[in-house]
Image 1 (cartoon, rainbow, N blue to C red):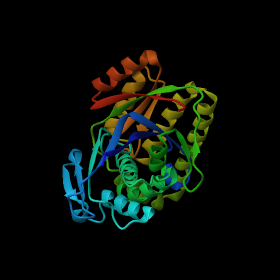
Image 2 (cartoon, rainbow, N blue to C red; image 1 turned 180 degrees about the horizontal axis):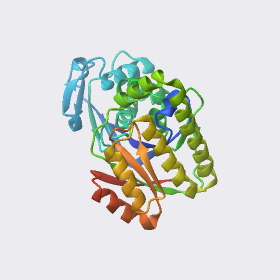
Image 3 (cartoon, helix red, strand yellow; image 1 turned 90 degrees about the horizontal axis):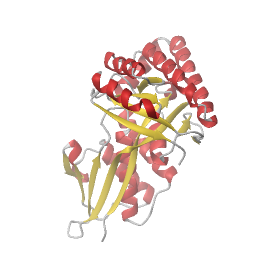
Image 4 (tube, rainbow, N blue to C red; image 1 turned 60 degrees about the horizontal axis):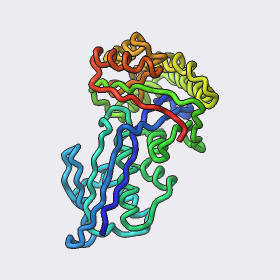
Length: 315
């Protein structure tokens, strides 16, 4: 029996992190330069239902039976069996690898889940729809994020820019004019659930202040959606700068993120902001092709652990 493989991209949130959890709009885009990959290989000599899991990037070598039921991989595999109407998958090994930085705001957990679901469903000849994949990954995202908005599983499943409002129909966002982003990694791991939980507690303690911040972030996303659809890319830079300022007020930036954001702007970026949960992880900078090298150099000189140049366009 042949091997079955699937992959899924990383992502960054362009506008709207944290506020999206509270019903405000957000924009996220795929980052295809980094990907998670899953390979399913049949093991007909193994006992029926034996599913061996090999994930060298996180030093995991186990079986599904030995994996805690609350582990994200166990959750997504068990959800898949229910969705596919089977008791278990035929004996196989599941190999998972990823080039997406972990806990860096780039959707590594969701990408792994998407790749695993697609590879496993392909192995039994019953491909899950995009809607099914996204819904199942959302369940696993509850473990990673605590209070997920649903934006990660959506943008990674569809691998297209999305305009997203929690609980409403997702919009695939047309990009009239391509634009370039540089992603700068602080090198500091930042589990999303912790930052999301802290913002939630702050919101509970001061509804009025945080609702005003969320409204302002949502307004930036609405303006950005219009700019992307019309091709008026130059207006995105100031909107990114404003979104970062609002996230600073929420308390989710960090000295390392602020340093990279400031370095990107000084290096010629049109705008820059943190991306994702904050408190570490990654930031993004909007650049023209002629300034991308200078901004990359500025980020590395300011301490970035690594950078990725990605082009956002309508596929």
